[in-house]
Length: 373
Image (tube, rainbow, N blue to C red; front, side, top):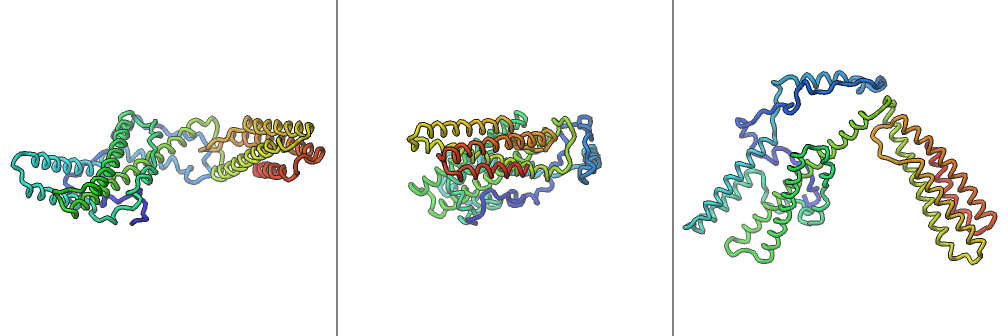
Protein backbone atom coordinates (compact mmCIF):
# COMPACT_ATOMS: atom_id res chain seq x y z
CA UNK A 1 0.00 0.00 0.00
CA UNK A 2 2.94 2.36 0.57
CA UNK A 3 3.57 2.63 -3.15
CA UNK A 4 -0.09 2.89 -4.14
CA UNK A 5 -1.21 6.22 -5.54
CA UNK A 6 -3.38 8.21 -3.15
CA UNK A 7 -5.51 9.26 -6.14
CA UNK A 8 -6.70 5.72 -6.89
CA UNK A 9 -10.44 5.77 -7.46
CA UNK A 10 -12.16 3.62 -4.82
CA UNK A 11 -15.17 1.45 -5.49
CA UNK A 12 -18.67 2.40 -4.34
CA UNK A 13 -18.54 -0.28 -1.69
CA UNK A 14 -15.29 1.09 -0.24
CA UNK A 15 -16.73 4.60 0.10
CA UNK A 16 -20.25 3.57 1.15
CA UNK A 17 -20.07 0.03 2.60
CA UNK A 18 -23.62 0.18 4.02
CA UNK A 19 -25.33 0.98 0.75
CA UNK A 20 -26.64 -2.53 0.11
CA UNK A 21 -28.56 -2.51 3.39
CA UNK A 22 -30.33 0.75 2.49
CA UNK A 23 -31.99 -0.13 -0.80
CA UNK A 24 -35.35 0.80 0.71
CA UNK A 25 -34.19 4.42 1.05
CA UNK A 26 -32.81 4.72 -2.48
CA UNK A 27 -34.06 7.74 -4.39
CA UNK A 28 -34.80 7.36 -8.10
CA UNK A 29 -33.57 10.35 -10.05
CA UNK A 30 -34.58 11.16 -13.60
CA UNK A 31 -31.74 10.92 -16.07
CA UNK A 32 -32.78 14.23 -17.65
CA UNK A 33 -33.88 16.57 -14.90
CA UNK A 34 -32.64 19.95 -16.09
CA UNK A 35 -33.55 19.92 -19.78
CA UNK A 36 -36.84 19.05 -21.41
CA UNK A 37 -37.10 16.97 -24.55
CA UNK A 38 -38.17 20.04 -26.53
CA UNK A 39 -34.88 21.75 -25.60
CA UNK A 40 -32.71 18.97 -27.01
CA UNK A 41 -30.61 20.14 -29.97
CA UNK A 42 -31.19 18.75 -33.42
CA UNK A 43 -28.45 16.74 -35.07
CA UNK A 44 -26.73 18.70 -37.84
CA UNK A 45 -25.23 16.23 -40.33
CA UNK A 46 -23.64 18.76 -42.65
CA UNK A 47 -20.28 17.00 -42.70
CA UNK A 48 -19.05 14.12 -44.81
CA UNK A 49 -18.87 11.14 -42.44
CA UNK A 50 -19.07 8.31 -44.95
CA UNK A 51 -15.47 7.21 -44.39
CA UNK A 52 -15.81 6.45 -40.67
CA UNK A 53 -18.19 3.78 -39.44
CA UNK A 54 -18.82 5.36 -36.03
CA UNK A 55 -19.52 8.78 -37.47
CA UNK A 56 -21.71 7.17 -40.10
CA UNK A 57 -23.85 5.64 -37.34
CA UNK A 58 -24.03 8.87 -35.36
CA UNK A 59 -27.70 9.56 -36.33
CA UNK A 60 -28.64 6.12 -34.98
CA UNK A 61 -26.83 6.76 -31.70
CA UNK A 62 -28.46 10.15 -31.38
CA UNK A 63 -31.94 8.73 -32.01
CA UNK A 64 -31.38 5.99 -29.44
CA UNK A 65 -30.20 8.42 -26.75
CA UNK A 66 -33.09 10.75 -27.51
CA UNK A 67 -35.56 7.89 -27.03
CA UNK A 68 -33.94 7.07 -23.68
CA UNK A 69 -34.29 10.68 -22.53
CA UNK A 70 -37.94 10.80 -23.61
CA UNK A 71 -38.67 7.64 -21.64
CA UNK A 72 -39.56 9.14 -18.25
CA UNK A 73 -39.81 5.70 -16.66
CA UNK A 74 -36.06 5.21 -17.11
CA UNK A 75 -34.52 5.69 -13.68
CA UNK A 76 -31.12 5.07 -12.20
CA UNK A 77 -29.66 4.82 -8.70
CA UNK A 78 -27.63 7.81 -7.57
CA UNK A 79 -24.68 6.67 -5.46
CA UNK A 80 -23.90 10.27 -4.62
CA UNK A 81 -27.43 10.81 -3.28
CA UNK A 82 -27.16 7.73 -1.08
CA UNK A 83 -23.73 8.78 0.16
CA UNK A 84 -24.95 12.28 0.94
CA UNK A 85 -27.89 10.92 2.92
CA UNK A 86 -25.67 8.50 4.87
CA UNK A 87 -23.04 11.16 5.58
CA UNK A 88 -25.59 13.70 6.80
CA UNK A 89 -27.23 11.14 9.09
CA UNK A 90 -23.89 10.00 10.49
CA UNK A 91 -22.65 13.55 11.12
CA UNK A 92 -25.90 14.50 12.83
CA UNK A 93 -25.64 11.53 15.20
CA UNK A 94 -21.98 12.29 16.01
CA UNK A 95 -22.54 15.98 16.73
CA UNK A 96 -25.65 15.25 18.81
CA UNK A 97 -23.57 12.83 20.88
CA UNK A 98 -20.86 15.47 21.31
CA UNK A 99 -23.42 18.03 22.52
CA UNK A 100 -24.77 15.55 25.06
CA UNK A 101 -21.26 14.93 26.42
CA UNK A 102 -20.77 18.66 27.07
CA UNK A 103 -23.52 18.74 29.63
CA UNK A 104 -22.86 18.78 33.34
CA UNK A 105 -22.48 15.56 35.32
CA UNK A 106 -20.94 13.79 32.31
CA UNK A 107 -18.54 11.18 33.64
CA UNK A 108 -15.22 10.09 32.19
CA UNK A 109 -16.62 6.61 31.55
CA UNK A 110 -19.40 8.09 29.37
CA UNK A 111 -16.85 9.93 27.27
CA UNK A 112 -14.70 6.83 26.90
CA UNK A 113 -17.75 4.84 25.84
CA UNK A 114 -18.64 7.52 23.28
CA UNK A 115 -15.12 7.39 21.86
CA UNK A 116 -15.29 3.61 21.55
CA UNK A 117 -18.67 3.88 19.82
CA UNK A 118 -17.25 6.45 17.42
CA UNK A 119 -14.38 4.13 16.48
CA UNK A 120 -16.86 1.31 15.89
CA UNK A 121 -19.22 3.38 13.73
CA UNK A 122 -16.40 4.81 11.60
CA UNK A 123 -15.02 1.31 10.97
CA UNK A 124 -18.48 0.12 9.97
CA UNK A 125 -18.67 2.97 7.45
CA UNK A 126 -15.42 2.11 5.69
CA UNK A 127 -12.77 3.95 7.71
CA UNK A 128 -9.56 2.02 8.37
CA UNK A 129 -7.61 2.08 11.64
CA UNK A 130 -4.41 0.42 10.43
CA UNK A 131 -1.44 2.59 9.52
CA UNK A 132 -0.69 0.68 6.30
CA UNK A 133 -4.18 1.42 4.91
CA UNK A 134 -3.02 4.91 3.92
CA UNK A 135 -0.27 5.45 1.31
CA UNK A 136 2.95 6.86 2.69
CA UNK A 137 2.78 9.75 0.20
CA UNK A 138 -0.35 11.10 1.89
CA UNK A 139 1.63 11.78 5.06
CA UNK A 140 3.93 14.19 3.22
CA UNK A 141 2.47 17.61 2.55
CA UNK A 142 4.56 18.09 -0.61
CA UNK A 143 2.80 15.11 -2.21
CA UNK A 144 -0.63 16.46 -1.30
CA UNK A 145 0.22 19.71 -3.09
CA UNK A 146 0.90 17.68 -6.24
CA UNK A 147 -2.72 16.55 -6.54
CA UNK A 148 -4.36 17.90 -9.68
CA UNK A 149 -6.19 21.21 -9.27
CA UNK A 150 -8.32 21.71 -12.40
CA UNK A 151 -10.66 24.26 -10.79
CA UNK A 152 -9.32 26.89 -13.19
CA UNK A 153 -11.16 24.96 -15.96
CA UNK A 154 -14.55 25.44 -14.30
CA UNK A 155 -15.51 28.62 -16.16
CA UNK A 156 -18.00 26.66 -18.30
CA UNK A 157 -19.94 25.50 -15.22
CA UNK A 158 -22.89 27.31 -13.71
CA UNK A 159 -22.31 29.80 -10.91
CA UNK A 160 -23.85 27.61 -8.22
CA UNK A 161 -21.63 24.65 -9.23
CA UNK A 162 -18.54 26.87 -9.16
CA UNK A 163 -19.53 27.98 -5.67
CA UNK A 164 -19.90 24.35 -4.54
CA UNK A 165 -16.47 23.46 -5.96
CA UNK A 166 -14.93 26.48 -4.27
CA UNK A 167 -16.45 25.42 -0.95
CA UNK A 168 -15.17 21.85 -1.48
CA UNK A 169 -11.69 23.21 -2.17
CA UNK A 170 -11.69 25.19 1.08
CA UNK A 171 -12.93 22.12 2.98
CA UNK A 172 -10.10 20.00 1.55
CA UNK A 173 -7.50 22.61 2.50
CA UNK A 174 -8.94 22.87 6.01
CA UNK A 175 -8.93 19.08 6.36
CA UNK A 176 -5.27 18.90 5.36
CA UNK A 177 -4.42 21.61 7.88
CA UNK A 178 -6.37 19.90 10.68
CA UNK A 179 -4.75 16.51 10.07
CA UNK A 180 -1.28 18.08 10.03
CA UNK A 181 -2.01 19.88 13.30
CA UNK A 182 -3.40 16.69 14.86
CA UNK A 183 -0.24 14.76 14.00
CA UNK A 184 1.94 17.49 15.50
CA UNK A 185 -0.08 17.78 18.72
CA UNK A 186 -0.15 14.04 19.35
CA UNK A 187 3.55 13.54 18.59
CA UNK A 188 4.67 16.50 20.74
CA UNK A 189 2.05 16.90 23.48
CA UNK A 190 0.01 13.70 23.49
CA UNK A 191 -3.02 13.37 25.78
CA UNK A 192 -3.43 12.65 29.49
CA UNK A 193 -7.05 11.57 29.07
CA UNK A 194 -6.80 8.84 26.43
CA UNK A 195 -4.28 6.08 25.91
CA UNK A 196 -1.49 5.95 23.34
CA UNK A 197 -3.36 3.24 21.43
CA UNK A 198 -6.43 5.45 21.14
CA UNK A 199 -4.40 8.43 19.95
CA UNK A 200 -2.89 6.25 17.21
CA UNK A 201 -6.37 5.12 16.21
CA UNK A 202 -7.49 8.75 15.99
CA UNK A 203 -4.55 9.66 13.74
CA UNK A 204 -5.08 6.61 11.51
CA UNK A 205 -8.81 7.30 11.15
CA UNK A 206 -8.11 10.96 10.35
CA UNK A 207 -5.53 10.04 7.73
CA UNK A 208 -7.90 7.55 6.13
CA UNK A 209 -10.62 10.21 6.06
CA UNK A 210 -8.18 12.53 4.30
CA UNK A 211 -7.44 9.71 1.85
CA UNK A 212 -11.14 9.41 1.01
CA UNK A 213 -11.41 13.17 0.51
CA UNK A 214 -8.31 13.13 -1.73
CA UNK A 215 -9.78 10.31 -3.80
CA UNK A 216 -13.08 12.11 -4.24
CA UNK A 217 -11.23 15.31 -5.11
CA UNK A 218 -9.29 13.40 -7.78
CA UNK A 219 -12.53 11.97 -9.18
CA UNK A 220 -13.97 15.49 -9.45
CA UNK A 221 -10.73 16.75 -11.01
CA UNK A 222 -10.69 13.99 -13.63
CA UNK A 223 -14.33 14.57 -14.54
CA UNK A 224 -13.81 18.32 -14.86
CA UNK A 225 -10.88 17.79 -17.21
CA UNK A 226 -12.86 15.28 -19.29
CA UNK A 227 -15.89 17.58 -19.53
CA UNK A 228 -13.70 20.57 -20.32
CA UNK A 229 -11.90 18.65 -23.08
CA UNK A 230 -15.21 17.44 -24.50
CA UNK A 231 -16.59 20.98 -24.50
CA UNK A 232 -13.48 22.26 -26.25
CA UNK A 233 -13.86 19.64 -28.98
CA UNK A 234 -17.56 20.37 -29.39
CA UNK A 235 -16.86 24.10 -29.64
CA UNK A 236 -14.19 23.42 -32.24
CA UNK A 237 -16.63 21.26 -34.19
CA UNK A 238 -19.40 23.88 -33.96
CA UNK A 239 -17.15 26.72 -35.11
CA UNK A 240 -16.10 24.94 -38.32
CA UNK A 241 -16.98 26.85 -41.46
CA UNK A 242 -16.19 23.89 -43.73
CA UNK A 243 -16.44 20.12 -43.58
CA UNK A 244 -14.27 17.81 -41.52
CA UNK A 245 -11.34 16.31 -43.39
CA UNK A 246 -11.13 12.55 -43.52
CA UNK A 247 -8.40 10.70 -41.64
CA UNK A 248 -8.28 12.95 -38.58
CA UNK A 249 -6.02 10.59 -36.62
CA UNK A 250 -3.37 10.54 -39.34
CA UNK A 251 -3.63 14.28 -39.92
CA UNK A 252 -3.36 15.01 -36.20
CA UNK A 253 -0.27 12.85 -35.89
CA UNK A 254 1.29 14.42 -38.98
CA UNK A 255 0.66 18.00 -37.79
CA UNK A 256 1.98 17.11 -34.34
CA UNK A 257 5.24 15.76 -35.83
CA UNK A 258 5.58 18.90 -37.93
CA UNK A 259 5.03 21.14 -34.90
CA UNK A 260 7.75 19.29 -32.99
CA UNK A 261 10.16 19.64 -35.92
CA UNK A 262 9.26 23.32 -36.29
CA UNK A 263 9.95 23.98 -32.60
CA UNK A 264 13.22 22.06 -32.86
CA UNK A 265 14.29 24.28 -35.76
CA UNK A 266 13.46 27.41 -33.76
CA UNK A 267 15.46 26.14 -30.81
CA UNK A 268 18.46 25.34 -33.03
CA UNK A 269 18.46 28.87 -34.42
CA UNK A 270 18.21 30.31 -30.91
CA UNK A 271 21.19 28.22 -29.78
CA UNK A 272 23.17 29.26 -32.86
CA UNK A 273 22.42 32.94 -32.17
CA UNK A 274 23.60 32.52 -28.58
CA UNK A 275 26.81 30.85 -29.74
CA UNK A 276 27.61 33.61 -32.24
CA UNK A 277 26.76 36.27 -29.65
CA UNK A 278 29.10 34.63 -27.12
CA UNK A 279 31.97 34.45 -29.63
CA UNK A 280 31.56 38.12 -30.51
CA UNK A 281 33.89 39.30 -27.70
CA UNK A 282 36.58 36.82 -28.78
CA UNK A 283 37.11 38.53 -32.14
CA UNK A 284 39.64 41.37 -32.24
CA UNK A 285 39.20 42.23 -35.91
CA UNK A 286 36.59 44.91 -36.54
CA UNK A 287 35.62 43.32 -39.85
CA UNK A 288 34.99 39.94 -38.20
CA UNK A 289 32.87 41.59 -35.51
CA UNK A 290 30.75 43.29 -38.18
CA UNK A 291 30.23 39.96 -39.94
CA UNK A 292 29.17 38.31 -36.67
CA UNK A 293 26.81 41.16 -35.83
CA UNK A 294 25.24 40.80 -39.26
CA UNK A 295 24.89 37.06 -38.66
CA UNK A 296 23.14 37.67 -35.33
CA UNK A 297 20.76 40.11 -37.00
CA UNK A 298 20.06 37.58 -39.75
CA UNK A 299 19.28 34.84 -37.22
CA UNK A 300 16.91 37.14 -35.31
CA UNK A 301 15.11 37.97 -38.55
CA UNK A 302 14.74 34.26 -39.29
CA UNK A 303 13.23 33.64 -35.86
CA UNK A 304 10.83 36.55 -36.28
CA UNK A 305 9.83 35.33 -39.73
CA UNK A 306 9.10 31.85 -38.41
CA UNK A 307 7.01 33.13 -35.48
CA UNK A 308 5.00 35.54 -37.61
CA UNK A 309 4.14 33.06 -40.35
CA UNK A 310 3.11 30.03 -38.29
CA UNK A 311 1.09 30.07 -35.11
CA UNK A 312 1.49 26.77 -33.29
CA UNK A 313 -1.69 25.79 -31.46
CA UNK A 314 -2.97 22.68 -29.75
CA UNK A 315 -5.59 21.60 -32.25
CA UNK A 316 -8.63 19.47 -31.53
CA UNK A 317 -9.75 19.05 -35.16
CA UNK A 318 -7.63 19.44 -38.28
CA UNK A 319 -9.30 21.65 -40.87
CA UNK A 320 -8.35 22.78 -44.35
CA UNK A 321 -7.10 26.06 -42.89
CA UNK A 322 -4.67 24.17 -40.66
CA UNK A 323 -3.31 22.26 -43.63
CA UNK A 324 -2.87 25.52 -45.52
CA UNK A 325 -1.03 26.98 -42.52
CA UNK A 326 1.39 24.04 -42.59
CA UNK A 327 1.98 24.60 -46.33
CA UNK A 328 2.68 28.27 -45.64
CA UNK A 329 5.06 27.32 -42.85
CA UNK A 330 6.87 25.01 -45.29
CA UNK A 331 7.43 27.98 -47.63
CA UNK A 332 8.72 30.01 -44.69
CA UNK A 333 11.17 27.26 -43.74
CA UNK A 334 12.42 27.07 -47.31
CA UNK A 335 13.10 30.81 -47.23
CA UNK A 336 14.80 30.57 -43.84
CA UNK A 337 17.07 27.70 -44.82
CA UNK A 338 18.19 29.64 -47.90
CA UNK A 339 19.04 32.61 -45.70
CA UNK A 340 20.97 30.39 -43.28
CA UNK A 341 22.98 28.77 -46.05
CA UNK A 342 23.91 32.22 -47.41
CA UNK A 343 24.95 33.33 -43.92
CA UNK A 344 26.93 30.13 -43.48
CA UNK A 345 28.85 30.79 -46.68
CA UNK A 346 29.57 34.36 -45.60
CA UNK A 347 30.84 33.46 -42.12
CA UNK A 348 32.47 30.10 -42.65
CA UNK A 349 33.82 30.29 -46.21
CA UNK A 350 34.35 33.92 -47.14
CA UNK A 351 35.63 35.19 -43.77
CA UNK A 352 36.37 31.91 -41.93
CA UNK A 353 35.29 33.47 -38.63
CA UNK A 354 33.13 30.54 -37.47
CA UNK A 355 33.35 26.76 -37.93
CA UNK A 356 31.08 25.42 -40.62
CA UNK A 357 29.65 22.66 -38.43
CA UNK A 358 27.70 25.00 -36.15
CA UNK A 359 25.30 25.83 -39.02
CA UNK A 360 24.85 22.23 -40.14
CA UNK A 361 22.57 21.30 -37.21
CA UNK A 362 20.18 24.18 -37.94
CA UNK A 363 20.11 23.50 -41.66
CA UNK A 364 19.49 19.75 -41.22
CA UNK A 365 16.78 20.41 -38.63
CA UNK A 366 14.93 22.74 -41.01
CA UNK A 367 15.26 20.31 -43.90
CA UNK A 368 13.82 17.62 -41.65
CA UNK A 369 10.81 19.83 -40.87
CA UNK A 370 10.30 20.56 -44.55
CA UNK A 371 10.40 16.85 -45.34
CA UNK A 372 7.80 16.10 -42.64
CA UNK A 373 5.47 18.79 -43.95
